[in-house]
Image (cartoon, rainbow over all chains, first blue to last red; front, side, top):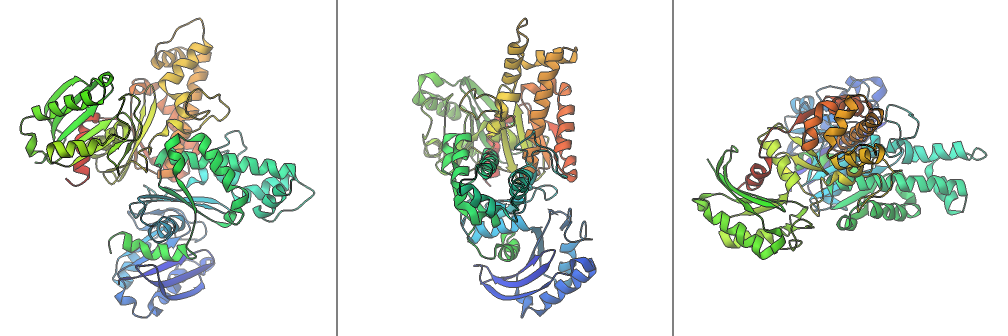
Length: 300
Length: 300
């Protein structure tokens, strides 16, 4: 059975693993990513970790998941906020020169989607759309076992999809962008704004308060339901996927909003599309497994 | 050079052609489709036309474009309004049994997108999104030279994407669906509603009146610009295509709204995505050429 090196590079930590093509983690190393010490330190550390993997030479390729969009033509990040100095850096070339095996890079949401499409909830399905509902909202499209990254690697940057046009502009995203309306951060922000006598740390508290009957919290959840219903309907209109695989921290409260989101979705799409499967992400480690599956998905 | 049979089957007419892999139309036959006389008559006529193509036996495959979503697994239409009796009919099997060569079927917008991606404006680009702005609004996604049809063939059924949630419900689509807000039909409807002392036959008249300075017409065009800008931004957020190829009758007035649509698009998407190319459809016969390219795109 073939094996691959998977790298999950974040702003805080980096993990490097040797993973077999069925998704079994054979070796794993973890360390701080040293993002704030600059790119050279990050790369030196990462390369050192791969060298420590026993028999890395037998691996058929290296795949790296990074926190930002990637340009597949240049093998580099298109934009990097959590990893200073990585925008445009020839990441793939650097790894290929160092290790002499094929290397690939992709955005962490695409990579997680790839893992779920190949080995998790969406195993074997032709069109799988992965959505992460977390502090932010992200997506990843996998068609016939390959991620679709788009021209600049922005495919799946669904955070910016406008669902509530009349809303104010909060940041670089368009007014009414779904991330500013229905992410965990947005739910928490709305609750702190509208229920000033309480303090909310995360969206789960708002979902609980709504369930307990608080009218303002219920209204916030109703908005989230409307906005996420519209987001999923839009994705179905564009892609008609076999399955949505949904991950991210908000899914800890899934029972408190997902049934209503699916009801809203069903109102907005044409009848045949209503049998799309809404599945919870299954894999415990989609980030690192999906990274290792990048070279696999490219035929290595 | 390989040749293929392309079939463009509509509610009114059917065309059958022998087309080489570079898109040259070598033979072409046209007849009424006899849609109202029922499926058996339609198929008998269509099969007869293919038999009339000289040396059809040397063709590497048959591709059919039809006016509605198709299920690729069953090789049939998922929904057929203009061709009564075709929902679920085993179209592909029937042709394969009759002619003994591989056959494929796809929605006409997907097929037109395939033609533009392989041989027209989007030639050679990895991710091409075709949009038709006509009496309706449709789309077709082509990734690496293959159409993406989705689970039920509804991928690209972008007519239903909600852009103006507060609007009334007009038909089977969701309230505020882009087709009911920004298609040629919608523009004409809005003008006839809001400028009751005039009568409008098509959207081009509304665009002209706006250019002549009529305030109500300008407001209608401003709404179209906002809605189409948001539609294209949404598509870029999901797919980050290399190019939008835009066809359909509204494009006769392209100079009167597309520059503003692109300006609106640029406001809504993140900076790197702003260099996506908005191209006019180039091919005169994308329907029949794209149909012939279906077997080509599947490796026949």
